[in-house]
Image 1 (cartoon, rainbow, N blue to C red):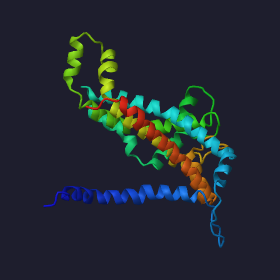
Image 2 (image 1 turned 180 degrees about the vertical axis):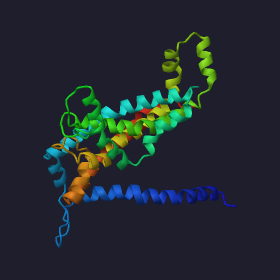
Image 3 (image 1 turned 135 degrees about the vertical axis):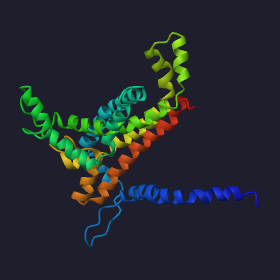
Length: 291
């Protein structure tokens, strides 16, 4: 048998996944970058090369900057809280408590619900005058408030929906990681006189850092690909106060039919996600201990 046959076998085993990766990830990304340098074809008028014109328009586009700013605030408001809640829930349901299986199911249920269904559930909660939240605040004697129709509260209301949806999903990863930690570590820490807080910060949390980084990257990607809830609940309103970057791309591409400008906006989104991946693999991985 030839000495190179194991290498050939390995590449053949990788070939199906490699073809799918190229066809559905790399090629669309390269094609999007290419189309961002052209104009949008209109009827009999074909696309023409315009260079950086779409990016110049983006710099002067106030809606783009509003959507990008909203997305940064959205990520800042949802990621830390989602991860903290996921870790807290995982620590709770990993212990020996009554109804542990039911709690795990309850925490994970929002994750398996379709995003459109989640949006409609929360749309009922936020509906002025007769929504569930309005009924609770009305019973407490508080005035009625249009949570999704106010610029000051709409983005925060959308953050709550995202946290409710994502925290249970991240909990599963933390729960799996906690079940891999040997109980002898807690026993040894207790024998050394360490408190539960010291054991968590000095022993347990460092062991969970690989999971935390994985969850962090997924949470950031989710924060920048949020579009379903926006379409159903606010459509970016009021006055673009809840417009996120991916929703604005969807709006430009499918409502305004400006595919070239949508491609340029997508390149910005790819750059943000690519920069995040670079930081993760270049800096954070080197400071993480893998068992």
